[in-house]
Length: 141
Image (spheres, helix red, strand yellow):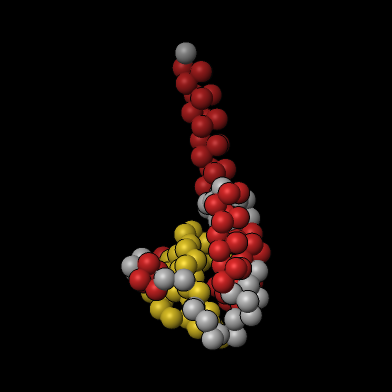
């Protein structure tokens, strides 16, 4: 019985360590790399591409939710966005940070909220939100 418990604990420990080794969403070389990859997609109105960079495993949205999200944004925005800014940033302890980026042209801005963690092996994206409603995004701060 002890060997079974030890084997179970060992297997469970290996599964937990494997799960902890992978980021919840995207992984990037640096914060600047994350900003560029995601920002370029949003500014080009490639919202499906932005989601693929943010969440390569597709864990955060079902296919139906993703399609609705992409369709609603691409039906509204007709021209690429021309301006971008880091609207708000908070550097937390231990390499964690959260930020709001904004992308706009003559139309309604697109806001991107992100929580990330800088680690020895790069930057992990831990949480995100893309929205056109400022109050929803700023409410996450």
